[in-house]
Length: 180
Ligand SMILES: [Zn+2]
Image (cartoon, rainbow, N blue to C red; front, side):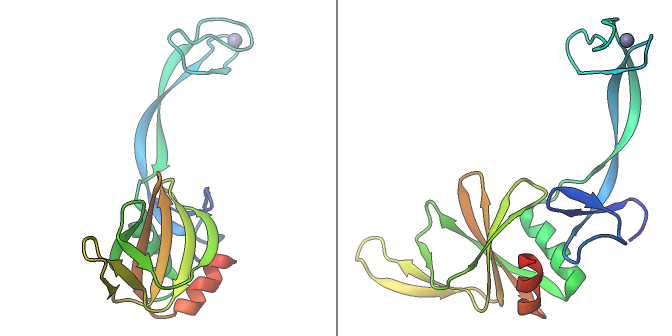
């Protein structure tokens, strides 16, 4: 991966050379954008119905330019790409935890606070087999439920908490890199 790829980490883009170990590789896509420039002093105006120069007040003129912006990927895809940079990793499943899930995690995750490119928040990580308590609805019975995999990642997104599960070669290494 060289040209046309940037590495996303904590809201910032890096080149491959300076990217932290778990920075997320994102393709750069070309998009057309319009900017408004003052014909007198060349100052860029804020977008508005009739953009005016913030310096001299002249009416600004539109100019089309091509910008490169990182592609949009969801949390599970972003994490799979990031983990694969450090060791072999693949997605094994995802379950909803809050607010409407009958599943209760039977593991304690390490707290984290890491923003992902789609705006969701990585709030926890656990190295081990993710097991859950499945609460009965009518008769009050409980059973357990487990997902294949050895690394669980807890992601918060718009009021919903999800547990994403991966099978990775080196779960402890990834926990350390995520916490660093
Ligand atoms: Zn001006």
